[in-house]
Length: 124
Image 1: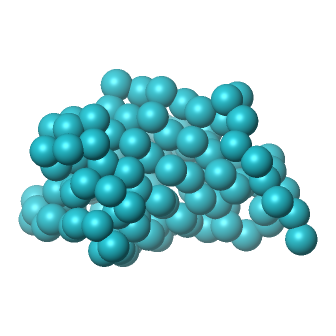
Image 2: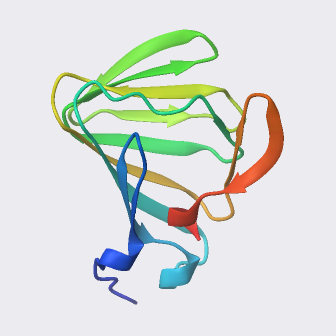
Image 3: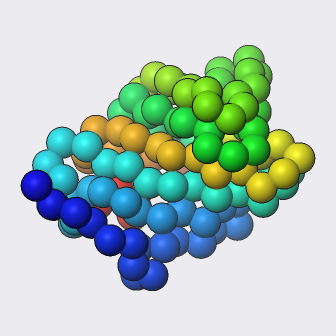
């Protein structure tokens, strides 16, 4: 067993969110990664695809998630299962949104128009 404590060196701020790495290979996990995503109201993340299935559990606020052109909304206590390889875009609701994300280790992102995979720093 290992208990991982939050540290500032695992907090990554982007234009869309503040992401805090909670568990990943760099913290001793061998199979799963999880991280917390905090988005300000009305923030939209980039259109992208991840090569691993992800679980997004809404802890506070709400999300609108567009997958392959279809938009769904998730609120507190709901979990969104995002399949691997689908184009997705996430938008926070009208209040601060906190989400817990989980996926298998080794995930990479791609963005339309750029086939080069990008590692997810919070999942390393």
